[in-house]
Length: 105
Image (cartoon, rainbow, N blue to C red; front, side, top):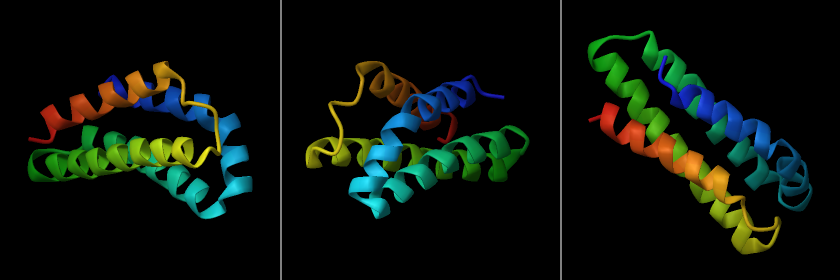
């Protein structure tokens, strides 16, 4: 299993309190953030148990979802739904994205 699996789970745990507030202000964006973050974890896990093209496909899906998660975080910040997203969360997301760029190539 890639180390970013645990990184992404940590991001989700950190975002839990924020998600409640986001969903109160914009339920659609909150659901989209939740789905995207879930997709990263699930596709990294599935890719880790796959081989060849299937592994690459799962990691590419996880990469798209990781970028979507980061975009959702930036959007909720821009809308003022939350205080600035903690730097540690952004750093973990960038680590996840960077790893997926390498393994999905």
